[in-house]
Structures are given as C-alpha cells and as structure tokens.
Length: 410
Image (tube, rainbow, N blue to C red; front, side, top):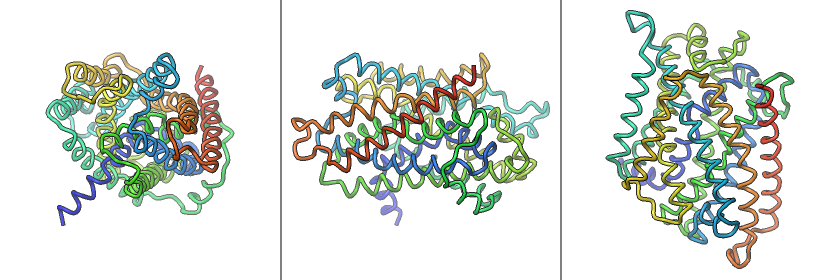
C-alpha cells in the first residue's frame, strides 16, 4: 500500500512542486486579504485563473515533451539574448522580492501566535526564527537530491492542505456567499484591483509555466506521456483552487462579518484568534508555516534552475554557483526582520509584479508554438490559439489592474 502511494506521489511530483510553490504565504496573504475585505466576492477571478492555469501548464509542458527544449533557452534562441535576459530578470526579481515577504510573514505570524508562550509576552524573536527556518531550508538543500526534494515538498504540502481545510470547516461562511462569488464583479473600493491582480499573479504567474517546462524536462516526459501529464496537471490545479478557497473562506467567515481587514501579517492571527478560537488559529498558523516552507523551498531552487535554463546547461544544484545563489535567496529572508517593512504589502506587490510579466511570456510562447519549423505536426491548433489569445487578454487586463493598484499606493 505504502509502495503504491509512493509511486503515485512520484508520478505527480511536478504537480506537487507547483502546489508547494503556488500556495505559499503570498497566496495566503492575498487570499486572506481578499476574504477579509470582500468576503467571497472575488472567487470568480480565482476560478478563472485556475482554469487558465490548467490550460497553460499543459501548453508549456507539452512544448517541452515535444521538443525536448526548456522555455528560457528557447526564448534566447528564437528572440535573442536581450529579451531572454529581461524575462529572466523579471522572474528573478519577483521571486527574490517574494522570498523576503514569505519569510517575514511566517516569522511574524509565529511571533504573534507565540506571545502567550513567552514570559515577556513578546513572542519568539523574528530574527531568530528567520535564521532557524533559513538554516533548515539550506541544510535540506545542501544535503538533498531531487527525490528528497520531492518527499520534503510532499510532506509540507500534505500538512498545509490538512491545516487549511480543517480551519475552513471550523469557520466556514455561508455556502450561498461562495456561490455569489462566482458572479464576475469588482468591488468599488480602493485596493480591490491590487488584491485581484495579486490573486491572479500568485495563481497565474509566468514562473509557474517556465518551471513546469523544467520539471517536465527533469521527468523526461515525452508526447506519449500526455495522459500522465494531464492527470498531474488536473490534480495540481484542482488542489490549488480548493486550498485557495479554503484560505479565503477562513478569513471571510471570521474577519469579514466583523468588518476587519488584514493590513499586516500578524493581523491574520491577532484578529482571527478571538473569533475562531485558539485551537483553530493554531491549526491555521501551522498551515501558514508549512505553506511558507513549502513555498520557500522551491523559490530558493529557482534561481540556479533558471540560470541553467537560460544558459542551456544541465541543472547542477551541487555546483558552487548554485549553492551561492541559494544562499543569497535564504539571506534575503533576513531583510524585513533587520530593516523593517510590511510583509503583506510586499507579498501582494510581488504577486502583482508577477502578473505584469506573464503576458510577455505567454505572447512569446504563442509565437514559438506556431513555428512549423520547430513544432512540425504539433503546431498550435486554431482552438488553442483562440484560447491563448483569450487568456493573454485576461492577463493583460490583470497586469493593467496591478499597475493601477500599485500606483494607488503612491
């Protein structure tokens, strides 16, 4: 039985990686902010972005399974180094900003939750917990191999999912409100556009599809493995939607009726605890920690992976350059504890920035997919082209919303 479970998890390892990356503290803070401010009103862009993500995950994965090529190296070959460098830099900046926000959200939430456990009432020191979590992640990376990475992520993702689903059922809002959230409408309030762009950014960020290509290449999947790839993508995206809705519902069922909003990471603990109870909030905090670690683990691996993709070189995580890049990512977690800042705002802005670069990546990919000399009989069909153009229009609209939302901050 355990062997069968292990084989199944190994077969959907790319999907687990995407869930671990996708449902991190960026997703949590954005979904919680949305649920607290607008209830379940913004379920519809989340559902749309998950449907589109399934299509795109298959689209990008299929490209690699057909050609054997990954995305950044393809962009460099067909559009030139400057464009590929721009995409690489945009993805790295978004991820490194996210890395700062992820770690600070986790440590601030742990600090607020732990206040009753310390004599001073100040909770665990964020700088110390940041160093502790960073050391754990770097240790796992330093001693790990690809299969160990998969197992660690599977554990984190499972614990995270159980925690959020349990919390949702403890404080679930009116199901009718969830259904009303499927009707497209945008709240006429300041900040709504930024949160909406952040929701789409965290679900449809271009990095997901670039990484999907790398994971398919790592697995060695070919066009004959389409059924396996489809199952992996369906499980991954379905869980993304379910867990995101659970987080939104937890905030909508507690904070929204009381008119409370999430302005800082600690608000998620400070405001929810009196309404949901100590046990429920402890489960939620455990979910946040697991989500943060399951998100940080892929994030710190992305820089060496992206550089290897860009340079068309094998992915060697034991090289000195890879270890230095991962160390840099881990050290970025110290920025907010040392210099200060608002991690929730950092997270939402980073997700909105991710939404801004996504249309470019999708547009370039659409051009490549229609190259007969490269794709042969597998060039994009009319229906796929129409779908891609529709999704591209959606991502452009969300990018504009993100730009407007960020400008409203200033």
